[in-house]
Image (tube, rainbow, N blue to C red):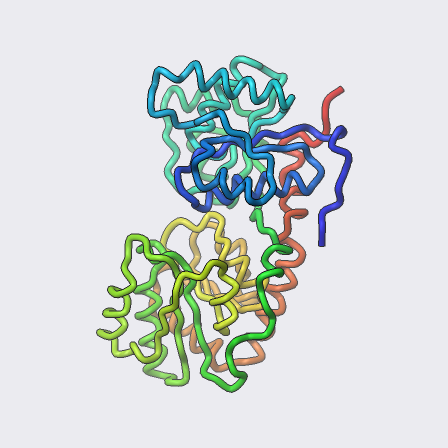
Length: 379
């Protein structure tokens, strides 16, 4: 399912700027936006601090990762040096569109726009849930030196259009970017579960309070009080929460024998293959939610909270069940409903996979943003 490669000389050239210090949803958005554009026939590159994870991963993915510019210099004296470095990258590459993927990179893109004017387009990518900082400088950058916006969820469009009084036509909603081909290379349809084993619900996410692990465990305990033929899996790297703390909490709830804690695998396809139903119990964030797309791409039904992009990914009563965030009782009821109805699990899983094949691809992502970035070169 490759992308149709079009002539690069017919398309606007695009430079992405990433300023994330660590590998995050926004860093992923920057790298895979670059990859989607490259596979869609655009001449594109990504620039930022070459020592940071996003740039290293971009290089690993075979992207044109350009060093020599640091969007977050530690020394303010380097302002002119960094601005000139960015301008030189744009001049040499003849880039006509710049996509900043963070507030700091947006500042630099604004400086570039101020200097180069209409010869370049600035399209701000919105892919994190932090509250926009509204001040005199940011108002000028957003209103005067930004040509459009790519948003990973409708909630971000509402938030930023309201904060900076921006018209709707300046925004493009872009679900993803998700490399379905890459995911399918990892995922094995042969489940590691035996056909007659207990139904397993999985929460695959970093161990952080916003991911709602305690909510998941409370709902698990409530569901187990009514159906003992259930199992639960938690997989993810430790962040603000320790695995031992969650293990202790499961023990306090009396369900430790029913909950399996796995290592943080190098790819989510491994723990996904061990579950029947994917759960997203997040209380915040989730303006991209790669795991939701991965659940659906693997044909798993999904139970999800109702925050940010989640209702746009998981269609209630079509690919899964949406429950109000932090509502333990309704989460538990959703678990019981799917545990007791194999046909419904298969129906939701099949519909989710169909939607993933249609919408969660790099092709679909490029199609959703090409009009806002200015698809063709101007003669």
